Length: 287
Image (tube, rainbow, N blue to C red):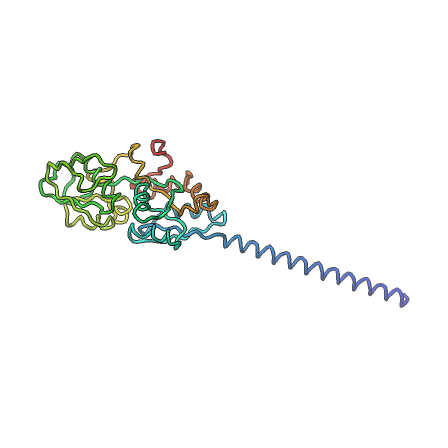
């Protein structure tokens, strides 16, 4: 075996090793690029959603669904109804999931905000609860009734009392205490923060309590003295997902609404809320 042959052989081996090296560098770089891409997808887009109360199993289910699409829902909890819209308007959160059509409309008028509806979530009948009576016939003159003090829920509570046959109201889109034209029993109706209605049950005969507040207070809807009935007139009180007007057509937010309107979430609503709330998008009368 001559020297020229050995020289050529060494040259071929060196060239082959160089090609292998370049190929390995290429593969390594490509792998890192792919991993970086996957990392970005995993990080995804974070959407801050404001709620009132401390638990929203339906929204948690929605979060699981959209997680697969790279959307991370971060739930931001607020203690009362005055905070989520303020936080939304100021850009502290991206969406909120706590209010009704009527509440949102009233809020926009009063605070000059431009908050819009993205989609329906649940319909949550308001109930009259009591620790002192078990039916309406037991109410007597001078009994104290507590109702929420924000415009929307105060009006809703008064309509609840009217449908129960306890009072009569003047014709008004959103009634207030001033619109009571008949109170035959002589009930003493007073308003306080919606979040305090359940806590007031030790001090009053009965209270009109929103479903979320009732749920947090562990009040059983089956034990309510009286409950709202779901009809076409219930639409103003359907709960909604809301965002600022500039985000009305946000594709990510639309995916969240679509995820909400699924059978999986409807099942969670029926199972976890124990009758406090029902999936509004399944009721044709509410569309």
